[in-house]
Image 1 (cartoon, rainbow, N blue to C red):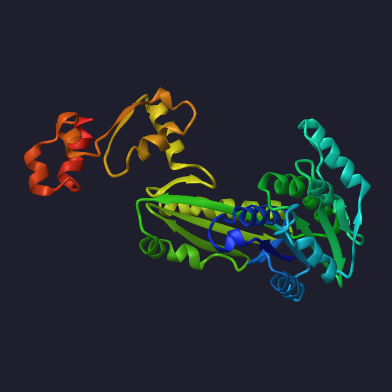
Image 2 (cartoon, rainbow, N blue to C red):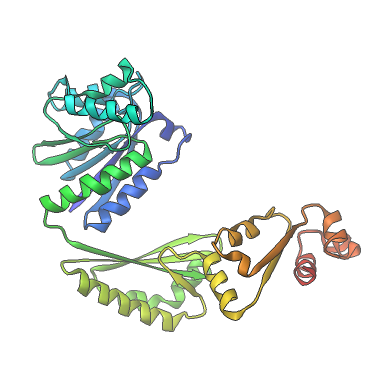
Length: 340
């Protein structure tokens, strides 16, 4: 079962806003067994929206669309929808009463612009929006399901979780998808792939491996697809255990665990404390460590020695070493670490 996501908005195309909605929706779709085969970002433009809807309908049976449902003139999605689905906008009393209730809670008056949010295509299924004024819309055309939602993240997320996912689960017999991510550090992607090559080559055809590198960390994501989730989970767990035997020195956690959280647990278990001496990082390491609740159990403090005077006066770094090796050098880092 495949789907596509269409995100509408000029702000996404000029880089003003990061398209976090699409990645979140993709995660939710995968969680119920629906794979996302494509994510498309289009402008607030009539022709672009029509083209994106038409092309997606030729490839998949489920199209999820966000954005362009606001009350202002730059939001053109609803009129475009009406053209595509051969419908017309009509006043929806239920939607209007929801808007009135929402504005009443906020002690605000419903303006004419807000009232226009109750105008919906006459052939859609209106989806509730408990967090805002823009209703979602569900269409079915030529065997394809189209779901339109507002682009405001907290409105969209509530709609997906409480309405859209349950409806899709009821409508389809969905396959099982199991993801497991193994977190590694201390080794580069290419070296890692050489070490685990035999293990990777023995993966069954229904289980895929993806390398997800970032500075200092490589995530290994296993994705298993099949009919029985319990069987898939057991297969994946067994594969992870084998991997742990091959590279135990590089694995530090699983799935969404954070390196700073793992470090905190180790420090707490060992009853040890940590302090940081930072320069180019500007205190960022200290920030990561203290972002974990309860970090006061093991974090004592930090000196951000951005200027060499602070390295010398506060950390006791040898002035002549800075002159000889430079501030960004192994010799200076060693002194900073020892003296903190």
